[in-house]
Length: 217
Image 1 (cartoon, rainbow, N blue to C red):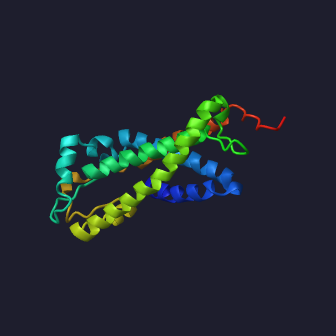
Image 2: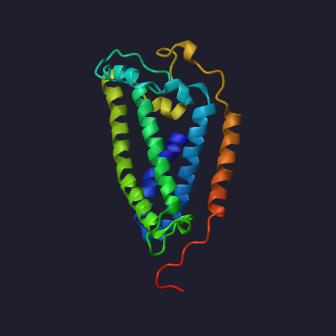
Image 3: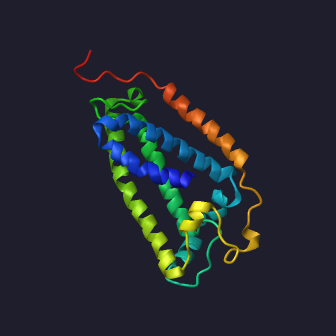
């Protein structure tokens, strides 16, 4: 659910960012994105087996060894994220965190003010705006690489990654029974989701008043 929600949020955020009358929606999408990223980070610490960072993050040496198998048709599929997929996960989570966080402070210096824009100086606001803009332009390229990787695994290795992304399941014909999980920890996920939603609401609700635009008094 987190994966596909983000897949919908990214293009929706891009569309609303480029339409003046949709900036309020753009801000709301940013809050949702922030919540999803925080949830995924927490879920990476205490979630189900293959969702935890400790299950798929590998060191540089092991990641490089795996990279050398990309052209091999008979490479063994991973139960969760493979080492290169882990790099992509970290990269995307980092970029989305940067995007959602800078959005809290960003401004178009006319009508749009992030909830915490009033807490930083004009100089810092300009820096944040630049980061928000550049990072937002880079995220689609990372998504393109993600889609190319999925296509590569399907065409060359015969590994269907789309199905597991939808169902959360991989067939026992290619994955060892020892890699199965006993529980998806649904109740824990709901508790964390509720806490994160409350936290994001508090971040927005406790923000200082927006600054007065130039020329208005």
